[in-house]
Length: 414
Picture 1 (spheres, rainbow, N blue to C red):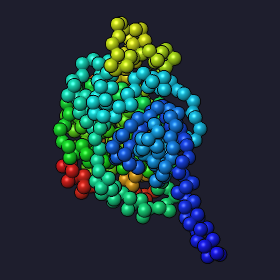
Picture 2 (picture 1 turned 180 degrees about the vertical axis):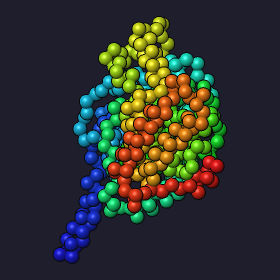
Picture 3 (picture 1 turned 90 degrees about the vertical axis):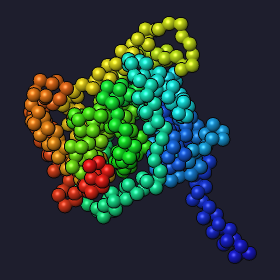
Picture 4 (picture 1 turned 120 degrees about the vertical axis):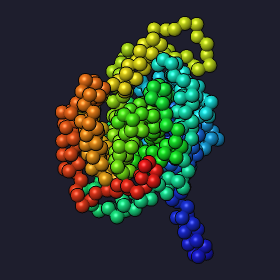
């Protein structure tokens, strides 16, 4: 009898760990919450849930939880999207109630993005389709694990260094996921202007890099999409919703993978801080988003004042993205880039080298840049260089430098 009791107690103790998670109920806490087919950013997008939708927790794996929702649907969501209590509604919720489609099929996503594309002028369907294709596709877990292997090995060796890792303590100034359709349309307009480099291998390389850059931050679950513009300029654009456009010329100006990662991390910084979405934040009180857009399949008889207001806001946002940013914004994005690089295992000094490269490029072409208000002056570039150099050298010791991965970069880019 005593032996039977001991066996039963042992079984109960073994089962207690998973049962502590099974059947707990929670709520989605973001304006828009992504459900994926597996526990990782690289798994296929399966569904979208609005705020305060009830879910049942089935399993936990690192920063992800498997949940049941809508009675019988099952998928994975990040812990960032989960709350044990209902949360307050926000402006983005009212906006999403009428503009966001829960459809994550290619057709559903395409319709949602094209609705915004019509608001910012002529954008070719072909460019919008390319954006949607990348939103809907992904990469395999094995490819991602293979890509990040050297970075993970380096991080494992570097643990214990008090200066190597720095927590990225910032709160996004806007709900990034809720802006994905708008950001996709703006990115499509930029691509329409420059043209897109059609190189699937290089594109996957950049997007694997973007996933690796955020894995060790609190933004591990935000998808960033990187597109290559067909231009020799040294330029990059950060659009709301996680869309990054960088020119072929800027990629080719890099000398190793850490410098290319610095470019991507810099644009991530702009998105995380909501620099491109500043106009939306400023004009919130003026816009009654509940009636700004009709449902995608609903016919409307007229064009309301609110819709005109929303159109103007989207165009203002587009103009803000393609024009020269405030120097203050560049300082912030440069510093965030250094932190993201170091936390991912890359050399944090790569952002310093990239600013030096861009400064030299402008010096070599004075006629092109001297009177062009779209680019920073040499004095402004020197200010950026001095600021980020001080930041990096103050926070990261020379003995804990990260990886440059020059050989892999040369195979993929050169």
